Length: 352
Ligand SMILES: [Zn+2]
Ligand SMILES: [Zn+2]
Image 1 (tube, rainbow, N blue to C red):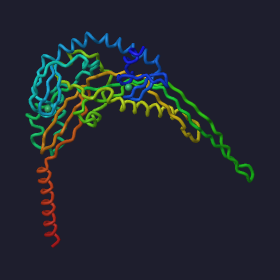
Image 2: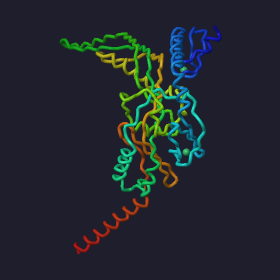
Image 3: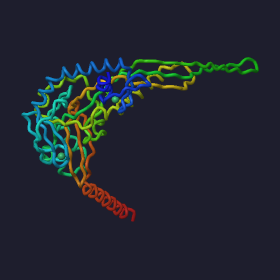
Image 4: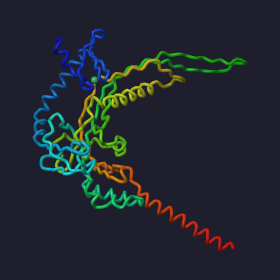
């Protein structure tokens, strides 16, 4: 019994569970979840079946990819065996071949690229045209060669939440009879209980890419999601995740718990006031998809700073902070000041 107990993994974050004698169930010290022995057993049986089903695909993945690493910034870049990576898409330094990436890193789903390199270049050029204050080299042909089609690693979660909420709700009614004003207050003890399911809560698993940049090119359309095949990687690069699902789980749980709380609050309608006295939202099971999402990605070094630019490889939505050519800006400001002085001088002449 004791041996079997230690093998249970957390259905939310896959960390090892501990038996809690007082609660007569299993607790995850990592993510603070609690499970009854039955919930635990069912979820773990499902997980081990999944692992068995995935084994052959993992082997194929292991044989089909090449793993490169960047000696300068430490990035780890994945390509399929027929695509070779030469430079790091973060810092543009040469990368070295490290070998293969183990099968456990195999993604389960992918949204394939819809935009070609030409599409992405076109979007980038149009974006630059609207910004006259960019440094000249930013939109140059040599800079454009640094644009890389990157499958960014994402953890996408489906959660099951068991929600309970208790509230004191009031209905107030006032009326006047003769000289008397009456107020009637009815108080209700309201209880809600619900099983709620969330689908497709995303969190990126690449620490080197700014979360804000990835959020700015959202949303991705999950309708185009495919089961991962090595063939999708062909001609593109991918990033090895370095933030695991246990690390992103608190972010996902917050969204699921807050969402459930809002849902139950919203269901308490028809009262003049609602005071929630108890809100208990338990995330019972989280199913993860390790998914690759398509991004045309480019970084640019300027005046000692790194700038990142990204285009959603599915929808074409672009984002990034443009570098400013301060020389150009100053020149324009100078020209405006000079122009004003000239106008002032002409007006001065006319007034005289
Ligand atoms: Zn956990
Ligand atoms: Zn690098």
